[in-house]
Image 1 (cartoon, rainbow, N blue to C red):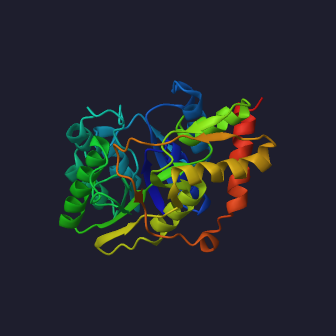
Image 2 (image 1 turned 90 degrees about the vertical axis):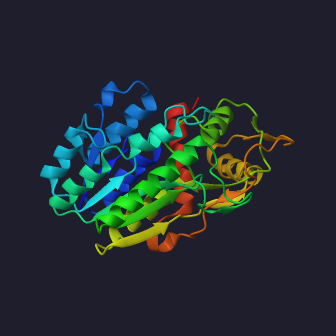
Length: 312
């Protein structure tokens, strides 16, 4: 299939682009800049990897005139909207309404051009941190203003795709981790261990859903490839290691210890503050064998990446 993918410069977007291409699809990746023009090294590496497997469409943003031109001329079978406004997404002052408006900018015109060129299938990336998604505690509230922005975006897409008779697939992601990740929790752990230092987990009691990004990407490519043209709504939220953050930290340490030949020590600190819901996980168990995913090879690849780029 011919696929237009937004958000390909992101951590998960990089892996999605590569898995879609590996599945035999013709991928066009919307990128704001050339690889060398991105300010941080990790994103430059990701974008360089994307352009190896996908046709870059430079300078367009979702809903703008350049993007409409891509749809008008491209004849895409599937529109995969993975990009999202994430500027200061951890801040309590994050503008959820403004972000949702950016995520769905000019959506009626986007869908009209997409359909006019023969497109019938739309795939939107959602988040387990949206209100009502996944399973967990506290009544599944919006996790944050960012979670609210993702829910508003999803509801907007569902309305307009339903109105226009399109097939909409929502792919809900939990906490991906692996090579080319931003400096989040697992990246912090890996860098501490490679520096010969003890790491710490400050929120070991939270139950979260950490999924290897390679498994997530294979599940995404399979979901996109199987989405029918018939109008309707389908959803998939693949689950990874659904367990306490303390248990996951010990799991990561065990897997890396034997691959890095380092002690990979960690302190699980006593957690007394719980400003977030205690439990939030996805629920759809992926068939790793059917997807062709090898768990041991995934751990190997993660260790090799960090040794190559952050090793001593």
